[in-house]
Length: 257
Image (cartoon, rainbow, N blue to C red; front, side, top):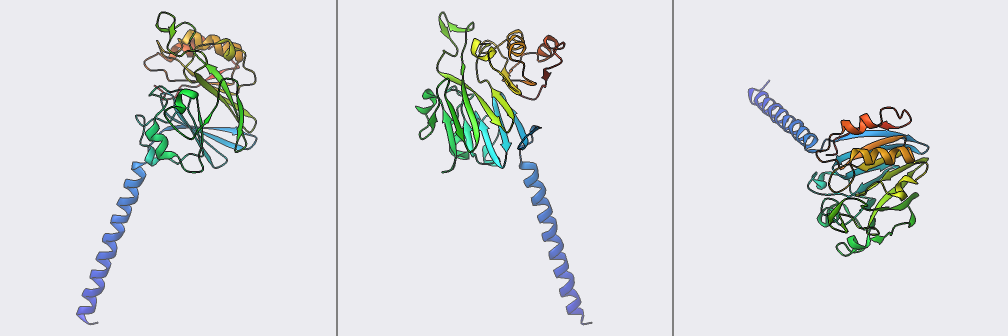
């Protein structure tokens, strides 16, 4: 064979090998760039519900090809790397729950946005839900539950979260009712809830609940699975200990500091 043809083939092989290596490196870098979070899968009557634990009070649910973001905040992850939202739920206006810039990042012209009245003053175009409201969006029943302080105060007679301003949300996924409480204490409205399968209850001071308050609420409405979240530096082993004899409540600790 002509030596020049041999050299030509060898050069082409080297180039192909080089481009293949670059492609593999690029794919590996892209995979490594995706945020890594703990995930749980819950079986429902309409398929699996995937829960992604992003951090603090921030969650993402994936269900029937829908991506539902709850209190998306940029300090906990890079939202440009996460799916855009079919539905966004914001519990209240504090900066660790409401991030208008992140909402712009994950919102499309088809995104449904649920806000409180105070949040709506900072983000336009959403649907306001008040305490007690019920709405169905893309087949998901959503209930707005009061979220407020009874005991813990910013100053005398001024609670960290006044009654009537913040929401928790119950979202029904198939046959499972999931309660994301927002920033609240163990209120009478919370303790009166029925048929809650999964509950996310906040557990950090001075803004929300002590482990004892969380245990009190859980014993009252009996969720099948309890996720303490938004717990800061609280020792999560305390809630496990307080509920160790409640065999009908499974306490799951995830990275939600």
